Amino acid sequence: MADDRVDKGRRRFLTAATTGVGLVGGAFAATPFILSMAPSERAKAAGAPVEIDISKLEAGQMIREEWRGMPVWVLNRTQDMLDRLPKIEEWLADPESANSSQPEFAINEWRSLKPEILVLVGICTHLGCAPVENFAIGPGSGLGDDWPGGFFCPCHGSKFDLAGRVYKGVPAPDNLAVPPYRFLSDTVILVGEDGGAEA
Ligand code: FES
Image (cartoon, rainbow, N blue to C red):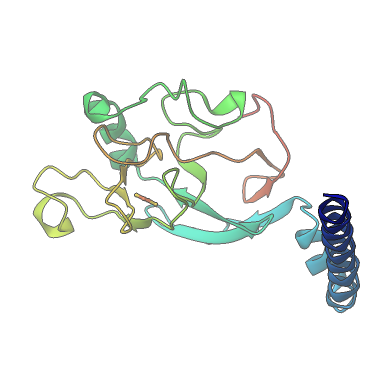
């Protein structure tokens, strides 16, 4: 019995000691890696806001950036894309974005500060795969005759509209997240800082 207690105590000590060594080792291993980065890369790794230049982003185009290790998409929606948003609300699980992750300023019909500029975190809200954009309409999209353009997650088939709102009846439970962001100018977005209701 006494031996059993000693064994358990020894096991606990060894587990704690091993974990401690692992954490310390991990810190030493990470330090040279962080120090070897350029200052802007270090800031990004630490989660600093990221500037995105959209001066060359044509209507209908999307660019990808990274913030806090996550993909961030910026889509410049055409007027036609915007006009399609209210027409498909009955197909959506959360058209008002009541249960989704976004700054207060993005709880509107476009989920954005400026109607045409959509900023999303490109991570599926089901199990974290990377959805792909499919802006074609109808049969040419491969997603059905009535597909109005949007995003499709190839892992388990979740679909999102051109505001990142999730369709009903798919595995993903929530709309794609909108990160905090603000406009530094008409052509530069700062992702990582909430811009409030500015437009
Ligand atoms: S991870 Fe996207 S549908 Fe499952």
